[in-house]
Amino acid sequence: MEVIFSLVVGIFFAAAVYLMLSKKIIRILLGIVLLGNAVNMLIFTTGRLTPAIPPIIPGGADVLPLGTANPLPQALILTAIVISFSFFCFLLVLTYRAYQDLGTDDSAEMRVAEPMDDPLPPSGY
Image (cartoon, rainbow, N blue to C red; front, side, top):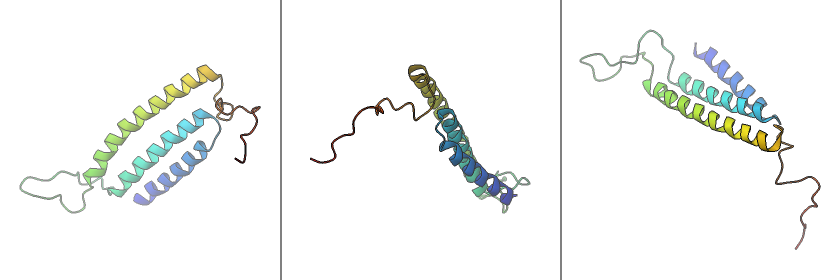
């Protein structure tokens, strides 16, 4: 089961990098979301996948039984989901506002600070 999850994580990472190398801002945002999901799945996979035994310490015991999943990665993922969703919402609003101001979602056309017609800065001092 972990092998399948590992392959899915690799596919998610590859697709995220492919999307983030695009010129369109929306594709870059989708790549960031996919990268966050890939990292969450990677953390989840490292905590062992065992559907049979829940990560609960039984009464009278001090430690988890053998073969249970590690609950720490699961708690970390819950926190990471909330953070990544809020980060995505912030970037989405920022992108929409930039689109309103500039009229484009192409990152090459958004170079207001670097106009194409300006001369190059001096090369020597």
